[in-house]
Length: 119
Image (cartoon, rainbow, N blue to C red; front, side, top):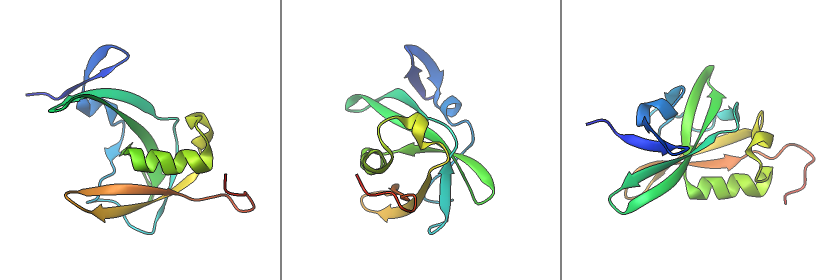
């Protein structure tokens, strides 16, 4: 069975929202910086507990383009440093760490540009 999500009220296959190879805990290289290359996009999925929204953005790192789904904690951290307008995130850098909990996931840490005070 194909997994489907909604994009602007149109259903698409989940494979369509990852434009590039998906960045996951299995292929991330901890300590390497990744650079945002797109403004990203919100999607709506349907799970066991109803519908939910998630954000997918493109990054470049280790000589390759990736697409990554950001969790709420990562989004919150990034917004505090780079602001709410995702268009402004382009060319900004982020570090991904693999977190081991009930399941493995990525946690993003934005890298503040030199000389910029923290908001």
